[in-house]
Image (tube, rainbow, N blue to C red; front, top):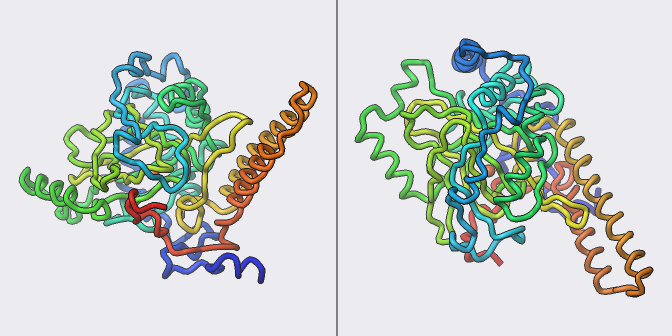
Length: 408
Ligand SMILES: [Fe+2]
């Protein structure tokens, strides 16, 4: 450990650094309060189970539950990073894709099933926690995630749908695949309070609402109430699907920061509509509605597919000491399984390519091989260098605050 601690200056998880000290015990300090479960969560469940025709045993059927229309490839407004004036990024961008405005993706029935599975009492026990560092978060703002593989069959089928991967790939401009279980089916939940006393804290009149929105937009993004403050994602692309947002709700969009550090709100998606961002290099936050309304999004991480490439996923904002809903053993099992599977496939690809080239009479390209090894070394280090037993720098890390133009 001596060698490690000289290399990594933060060997200890400190609450004073914005980290969750009880990360190994699944952060009991961040459990969802009983009041929220009994009132607001139960109310979401009641609404779903009273929907005519709702069947909790339903299977995912892409022909029925995917409402994507290929015309959306042409009609959806998209932004490249260049169009957002983002010229420098803290890690290399994968493509120039920046963001896509909402397009229809999931039917209401599918949305209800995903919500129904996520809000079950045993799922809330096992996979839900209040956020760690959030702006103005309350007992009604929390995250659920990592439940798809073992405890939510319908959600699991949606997460692994080849049809959805195809849609993401087409928008993004290169083949993409869903990443590890713990980083899929992540839900950002903000619920409306059913407590009359608490509801008084929300703006009541139209002019109060306008004033609050204007105040947020004038700020630097950190002042916008959110269930997750201004951040870069640890995954290449986030596909964000709206699960709940009443039409009367004001605010509550995904807000992105452009190259000149201005906030831009991606327009409110309707229920079942999706937006996409290259969140690994695009600074953003999920804002809460300004009004007293539910906002629930379903976020799925995607990374470049294929053995010839390595993914750029990191642990920075998703490791259990930063994101309390990530359960230590499950999270790292998923992480290692994913990263090593990618690495194994890539090593095999590189080895076979060397042999193939030799046998085709092309000889051995030493420089190219060394380049590959250096990428693999870097990738291998990222598999462990942010783990809690090694390094726990203060969160949020400094690069979340550095203007794009000042990045090295
Ligand atoms: Fe994000």
